[in-house]
Amino acid sequence: MTATTHPVQPVLSARRRRTVLAVCCLSMFLVGLDTTVVNVGLPAIGRGLDADTRGLEWIVDAYTLALAGLLISSGALADRFGRRRVFQSGLAVFGAASLLCALAPSAGVLVAARALQGVGASMLSPVALAIVVNAMPDPKERARAIGVWASVFGLSMAAGPVTGGALLAWLDWRALFWINTPVIAAALLLSTVFVPESRAPRARRLDLPGQVLLTMALAVVVGVLIEGPRIGWTSPAAWAGYAGAAAATAGFVWVESRRPEPLMDLGLFGRPAFSGAVVGAVAVFVALSVTLLLNTLYLQHTRGWTPLAAGAATLPLALGATVCAPWSGRMTGRAGPRLPLLLAGGFLTVGGLCLVRLTPHTNVLLLLAAYALIGIGFGFANAPITNTAVNGLPPARAGVAGAITSTARQLGSALGIALAGGLVTDTSPTGLAHASRPGWILVAGCGVVLFLVARVSQPKEATTGPASP
Image (cartoon, rainbow, N blue to C red; front, side):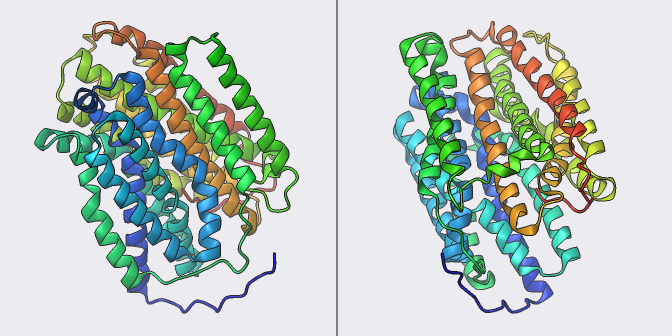
């Protein structure tokens, strides 16, 4: 492909740079919030649309699967056609899909609308970060902006259940989607006025075969996990799913290894630190998603709490994530990723172990303490994982590494929902606490994974520096 040269972007005033950061962080907050805000409303959605646990899992995972599968391609589209243009297109798609979600007459329509939301979200997360980086040429200012970005991302994920609980207390489950409309309208207006257009000096080719195979592999893996309890893990349909996932994965590896500009640079996985960071990103978001789903079902179904009370129970998690995310970023910048990864692994492990003997009458203080520990672990994890992924790479490959770790995070969210849902499908409210115990063992296991990631997180060629989300 012939390189395309674009004029140098004018230097923006400090006030306008802060405004650009605010607009982009607003979009990032929406993406993270919609990953988790629906969790606390799942019982109400199930009653309203007559959906069982598997249907509810699809309502959550349709969004995260579309987001995970399209993140990298959306970044390539923005480099080619203009970042502001793709960003605004993403806002429009996300807003329209939110309206469809709010008006959905059935669970099937809601699943489709949630997938469309994920398509819009995929055009917001990586593109908004590219806009911020382009608008801030000074490395120190850019590092501070990325630190703010990381904090907003962690806060949005953790704040979802609290926000959802408050909306359900005053309105109904459709308000979880109506609330996006004014925010989207404001972001569209502000981006038109304040966000400059920019493109990459050399846009990457779109890798359609790789995109199709990646989406197929992710969808089949998560689909088998969700539907496995219903169809049977050794049924012909399940075996067909295993074969389909293996074939799509093998095809993806074969295609990507032969393309001059692949969707995913598989050569990065030859670096133990990078591979460890990807595994760590999956593990952290598996732990978060398992925690949020099991918390919602346990507190509302088993203990009879209201959605607002169930959402409020995650406040310690949100607080721990919000306080520790920027602290972790500063710690990573000073001394590298190993210490915050060890702290993240320790807190996640202990938090999960606190609930491995969960009963219908477990002390509320123990629940809140466990959620706080998991939130602290989540807060410590994000900055060092991204730092580990991009450390020691040239700038041209660092962007791709960041996009792959973002995809891994969303994959972890989808896997966590599928795994947690599979544990409690068709379980009675009184038996849910016991059925969910393996889920808390899984959360603790994800913490152990971070200990292993910490071992490979400091490659010899690495240099410490500020981490991005």
